Length: 128
Length: 416
Image: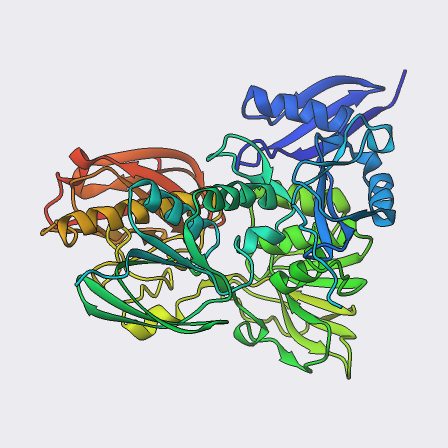
């Protein structure tokens, strides 16, 4: 018989912020209470089984009009990959120009998501 | 004599770009003035998602959202100056406004029939929230910290305390945590968080960042750099409770104490200001107390969502068109919209009854199982809850508005 675990979470589907409780036995959900709608129930299940987030940051760009371009994952990635992805982003540098939506890293950290640029960078000629 | 322009838009953020695009679509002669070197305004540094869910029905980052408008604006070849600072607006007559503008090429004197003022907001800083003590390096507003990190790529510090739990404070807490800084506390003077629930969950709970409700930072200490903050509990009247002082060591303090409409030039021109919104008093066309001067976006009222800012910009442009067609807003009789129980602010202030009108309002305190009640027109709207952090946005139909003689009260009442 496996141990029973309780999860308490605040729903973010709408501003109401229902307090949902999920009871799990092993990897099986045995009870969900406190949700106000079916969407909230689905959110709670997703959150306890495999929580996902969109990751965003900025990366260094060389010869651009600004020192950085902003980037994000093009879909939500498992929460535990966030630190791994942030480390990869800290290392990377790109050359201007960068287009909005341009893929910077494909399949980042084997997540199935790409890192894409969310702000363009124009190439600026160095002042001599 | 014809004016140089039909409409001059002051400010090239989301409200201004949306207003200029709409005004051009309506065939008006438009000039847009932006005082920074680039178009786009604050969303340029908002790299997080949550933008455009209403307007584009997509979840975009602030940067992606604003570039859709920048590219459209540039494609339409709308005349504009960046690096242009408006020094004064002189309402010479109902049909002529005179603007003095300083640009890198010199001083311009411009005449226009209408002005749309979309300069956004400024951040409240530590002098406005009663923080005493030293003034060392390492104190930033949330917007300054965001510019440093997300435009310039510079980390302001490693051990962070954030003052204020509005959305800007929460989003910066996550940003610092993602970049590996230790966010030691978010401190909120009210007994409830200032920001949207989704931000409390995804920005604080995800990263285990402690939120101190009913607490205030009273002092910052440090000789050359920030060393620590002193915080205390506050009672229900927001006064410090003696004996509850606590220290938190940190190298950076981020002040996220809310926004105030930025109206310097408009105030000098003489518009009437609503002390509740700290923005201008407006009618349903977003026209200020000076005929032909319109206002939209955070210069009008602090909005939660950029989608509403754009909606106001477009409305202001349609209003400028109406004004030019009729040589003034044709309405003669106005009904005043009045704040009732648990309403902190409401916009617009005057309604004609000629149009359906979108009303934006904020409550004073959170309540559950309530209804919005309009006694003079016998209208009720049920709501599961109201929260100060969530702006109320509802549409009043013209058939309802015309039921009232001279005023319409909006109040929050508890469901029996």
